[in-house]
Amino acid sequence: MGSDLIKSSLFYADQRLCSAEILPPPQVRARIEVAVLNFLKALSSTTPAISNLPMISRRSDNCGLRSGLFSDVPSIFLSYNFCRRSLMRANDAKAFVRVWKVMQMCFLILGEGKLVTQRELFYKLICDSPEYFTSQSQVNRTLQDVISLLRCSRQSLGVMASSRGAIIGRLVLQEPGEEGIDCSTLGPAGHAITGDLNLLSKVVFNSDARYIIIVEKDGIFQRLAEDHLFNQIPCILITAKGYPDMATRFILHRLTQTFPEMPIFGLVDWNPAGLAILCTYKYGSITMGLESYRYACNVKWLGIRGDDLHLIPEESLLELKPRDLQIAKSLLSSKMLQDAYKNELRLMVKVGRRAEIEALYCHGFDFLGKYIARKIVQSAYI
Image 1 (cartoon, rainbow, N blue to C red):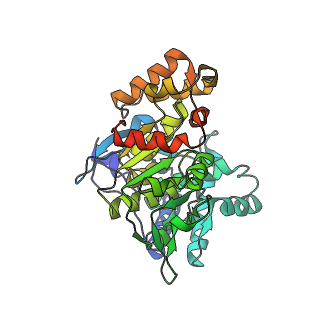
Image 2 (tube, rainbow, N blue to C red):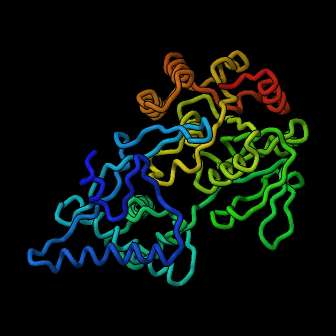
Image 3 (cartoon, one colour):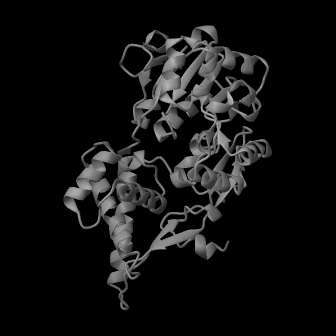
């Protein structure tokens, strides 16, 4: 790719990996000011024009898979390939204005020294600019546009990652100026993970666990917590209650940095969506754009897998839905997916069925803990 294309961005570096920096508020506000000045410069030139906004493309054809310099953990990255928001294209004009509206709001938020959630940002924007914002998804996409334009993280823009995540087990969390939280003494709902990444970055971890287990579903997480699985198997349990949010991925990544020898296992449904969730933890996601690669973790697929189907009654297997087949097709076409994972997907499509973790309850409510222990002891993971 030519240097002229790279330099068409407002902020660039001559590296293959394109990323969002973590910056202090004054630097982010300075970048917004530069964007405004560039716009005004083009508008006031001898040949006035409304300049386009060059942003890193978040399409699948602009992503690749990289390996860490000091680890074998691969992750998704975006290259220096640009898309543009333009006021002059009819189907792009509103998206162009939305970018400026979100930048304006972030400039004000940073000036006030505040942090807001994406939901709070949404309600403020539909109040101030109802003709441009009608849904949360529009705000989320526009925020990713701003991140790819300014090359700074969401937190740097004054926006907190909304968090659904929870954590429990053999772990003590020490937040600045607070008493330590012993996660092994909590109720089955666990400790709610804050969306403030700045606060999470300052938490001190202490643990005698040997494993980290990611659980797809909150119900399964609470079952394992109620059974005190972490006392039977020295482990930390963590869940995002579905697709992982940024805060849950961030704390998981911090745990792997603090305890690099502690393996991470994933317990998900045997269906394409379950594997997609596992892969988001493992590789990152294109939709998270320039921030995604930072939080990739070397997760091993513990279960449910095809070789566990003999444990599940035929009547407990559910038919694949059209949405499942769409996800399977997308994953099978991905260059990031390893062969063992693709073989599992092909088996799902071949039998046309999916299996939920709860199907193992046919052996009793305490069977799940035994299942996990056996899989770990036998190294039955991929």
